[in-house]
Length: 237
Image 1 (spheres, helix red, strand yellow):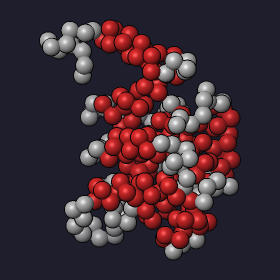
Image 2 (cartoon, rainbow, N blue to C red; image 1 turned 90 degrees about the vertical axis):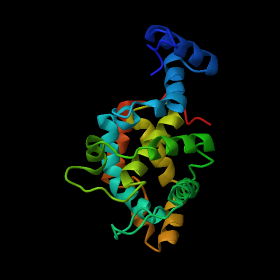
Image 3 (cartoon, rainbow, N blue to C red; image 1 turned 180 degrees about the vertical axis):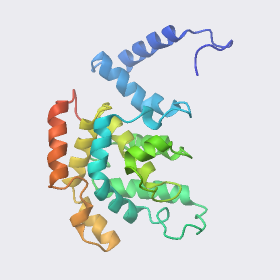
Image 4 (cartoon, rainbow, N blue to C red; image 1 turned 60 degrees about the vertical axis):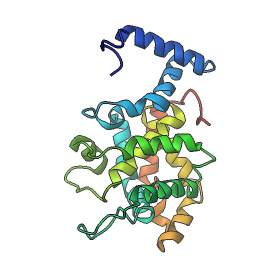
């Protein structure tokens, strides 16, 4: 998108060299590779071409973690995004739906103590913007998030959008594209009071509102976390 135009004679190699230098100046305290990844996550990720997979694609370990978290995340989605989750497929969408959804996204992260304890507002808004602009999610990505043969849930900001926004947020917090950042985000959320607050909002039991819980899902996530190793740094403030 940047190189190869008459108005910009910069070559792709020159552009990449410039990115390396920019990351070095912006994040001098980080290792070079980590700084470049953080620069991409925070500033360049939303510029992917429309034909590409959202967020640059999901790695197999991320898909596995999202599958294990699906039950809890879908229960949470139904509580916080009722305007999007409707059994009446023909019901009109509220005219201010975008602002309602953004407010719900912020409230969800406040309840689960992600905001402001774990991430700052710019990260949270950037993750939401990157995903909410997707009008149509590619079939492959929907299948990765929902599983084989499972229909989409919700309208406008669907469950798939919600799940992808969490992936985008985890990447921004840790500058890590693997599953370890996502697991750490979910573990933080499960240790918060979020499931209690969510239950009070939805008038349901809090038992199903933990993301990974304490059963097989949590054990699998811990095994994936051990295999991935410790990240180079904690969440980014």
